[in-house]
Image (cartoon, rainbow, N blue to C red; front, top):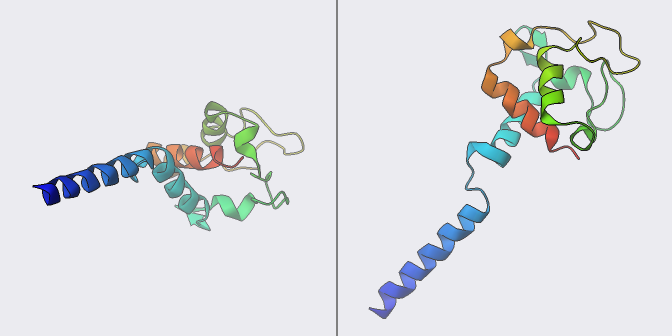
Amino acid sequence: MRKTMYVVALLLLASLMLAACGGGGESGGGAADAGKALFAETVIGTQAGCISCHSLDGSVIVGPSMQGIGSRVDADYIKASILDPNATLVEGYPADTMPNVWGTELSGEQVDQLVAYLLSLK
């Protein structure tokens, strides 16, 4: 009886620890992790991937760096910038610098994953 209670207590503790860590689901860390992997792709569909034009270290490649973007803008801004990049232009970058194709090249889930990842960049 005592052994069974010990095993049950350990299982309960383990499940509470997993719940506290998010359990690896698609919300939070899972989505951000998937977005990080997608951001790192050099080609997405028929276009150059995010990392081909946007750095993470503050340097300028073709487009603005994503360093710290999660502390400067919100999710709606990031999503709109992906789906309609000419709607709000970053100073110093003319219209059509970023391809206006991500609404068809990416699924809604992929856009949400990229948003989650970019928001994590504080």
